[in-house]
Length: 294
View (cartoon, rainbow, N blue to C red):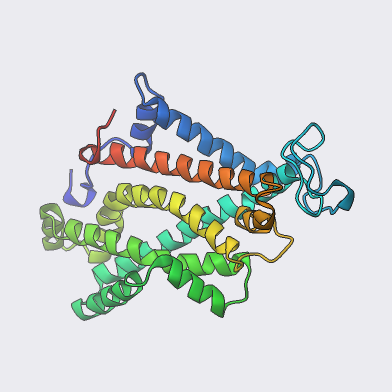
């Protein structure tokens, strides 16, 4: 085997994940969390088509109806069906969180790769810029950016991507630096293999596991942050059905029509827990020393 073809020969991370979660003796909690994530992702794609009522249709006669046979989760103050709005809001909340994590991961990996390949002065400049972003709390930075942009779901996604990419960049850059100074990479350099080829063939593939873990762990917090920004009124404008806005719309009726805010809050909690548990399972599988791997 030549050195240029010597990235570590190991079992696919996806295959290891599948065996740990679905093989005999796999953790029941992790299995349930993965099933919940699958259901949430399906609802995020087809949820609006499953809505029993028009989520945006106003019906004053049916306003503030409690949960019952006609409206399973009740209605809000304008007579809109809460269940239908939850289903319609699933893509706005869950798919937005996925878009944020994917976008921040792409930018972070790109910046880390450039910093690793670049001269030392450019590497230092990029890392100082990254540290400046990291010194500002993500929620504060996102709020500031959305204040500059026009309030919308797109603005939230852009702001969140800009707030989250530095963490990915720093983690990935440290891994890439360590890989690029390993013995087999140094030997490949002596044989004339270019740094760019080493990056693409060895360093980046050997960093994917850590990138997967970080991205999966980010999803849970991203769902909560997107909902929090929407609750503060900087998300998609009314009559948007994203879950954070639904909680905000029901806060004036919390004692008389508790279902308006309760069910969106439960949806956010379940989604955050499910993605968090799956992220924790991926982390334990990738690094058994971080917790007891089952």
